[in-house]
Length: 410
Image (cartoon, rainbow, N blue to C red; front, top):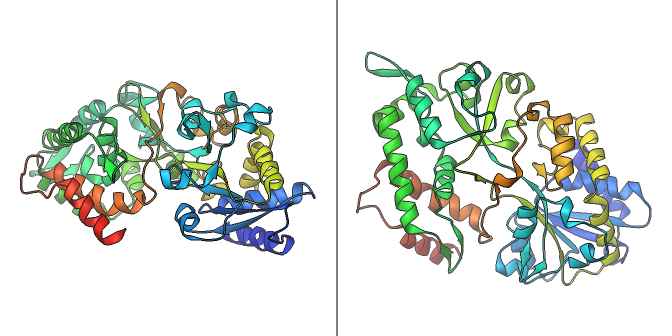
């Protein structure tokens, strides 16, 4: 994949010339766009896309005097980024695109003040994986809830001489699972001054997780002892070895497992009630206000958001084995409903009988552009600490942690 992407980047560089109104510049943090832009550049001879990679295109857009025509990636929905991009309603008004082709909830997240500023590109959802030999124990062929995970996990536990040799599941195995639990219990982290959330829901969520650990696993220490003893192997291998019943991961990680592993593993979408929380890294695309190659940028959007184009890109990804390391379209399910619902099962047979129920899809809230670092360094450590000690007044409050971090890092 690296060789192919390098080829397309070099091809784009030597075939493009910045400043030409037939050449649009695209900033992204997603390597897959090099592959896509390379094909666009060879599919016709009127326009070209020149691609530039940045770890944070949104931050680069704020800080740089240079401006791309197209920006694509995660974390584009913050207020500071929105002020630098322009509405895309003309694509729907002139019939170039149809709103009905997109997942409506994903599209709505890119709509602000009744104007469509961002188009969704791809998304992922949380899955719970387990050995196919245990599939008959689950009650639903599509989703699984926290309560069912806890109940099945308790029944799966096995101990010898007071030590667990098998453990069904523990929320402490994955910090991101703690975050998912908080969000599915309506904590609702969102962009604010600097960040907002429902503190009462956070308290309830952490109490629920702590009670789950004690009821299912006996104690925090028992979980830590089991983890220390057995977690030298990847969790998917522990599932296959039936050392554990469940592991949680994202759809992008599951569908890039080695094929022989994936064929022995089954999965369910993690849901509470009728909500499946989509990964907050969902990829969106927009056009900047100061872009100079509108015709080329518009042509790329019309080409890319097309069912036939995405079928071709999926075929080429399979042909060159890019699917081994990158799931679907731009690392996730396509935002185009027909592509995901009709085409993806042809390329990913494990999706047959497991298609995401559209009404359950719940996109994440708008979050600040530095959310990935804030989440990793402040939110997740706090959730882990609270999950172990839910009612400890000595734990430093989350709001003060965030203010301390911002004071140093912003």
